[in-house]
Image 1 (cartoon, rainbow, N blue to C red):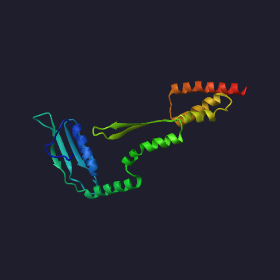
Image 2 (cartoon, one colour; image 1 turned 45 degrees about the horizontal axis):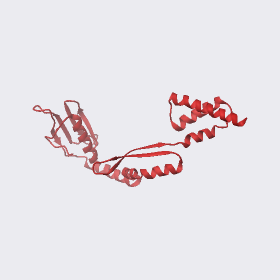
Image 3 (tube, rainbow, N blue to C red; image 1 turned 60 degrees about the vertical axis):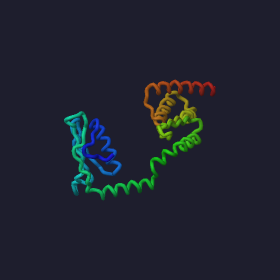
Image 4 (cartoon, one colour; image 1 turned 30 degrees about the vertical axis):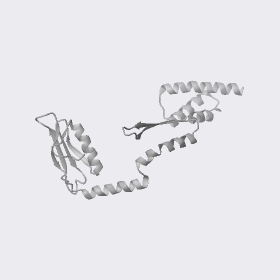
Length: 203
């Protein structure tokens, strides 16, 4: 929403959020020169070494009511050329890499590919249903069960229990990325049982 002199907000935080969204959508880099519980001053900082852009917004609390009001707005920018370059750059990057929304549209395809390449894995996609009956991607849950099977197959033939523990711990931490002591203790029990089964089968 474009800042207009006289607009009132509930708090400085609400105004800060609105100004941030507005200037980012226009491609202008800004800096909060003053931002506290009493006042808020926003200035444009496109290229301060070459010229000083006069665009700024100043706001403070009203004396008659509990509202945070915009007292001064200087909307004229002298850095339009730089902002146009920034917009063109973003468009060029989107043409090369694709838009982020296009990647979200392929979440289901990603999930099917993971299930195909990792049989037995668990892939769950979660979406948020909007009031207009459209859906928005929320998160994806992935659990690879083949990692543990691969580890046990690789270390099945190691003779001593100490070597099994050390190598399996390192590989487990490197592949799964877990550093919990409880997980490693449970892993020791699994390794010990695995070695017992291997010894009994070999004898």
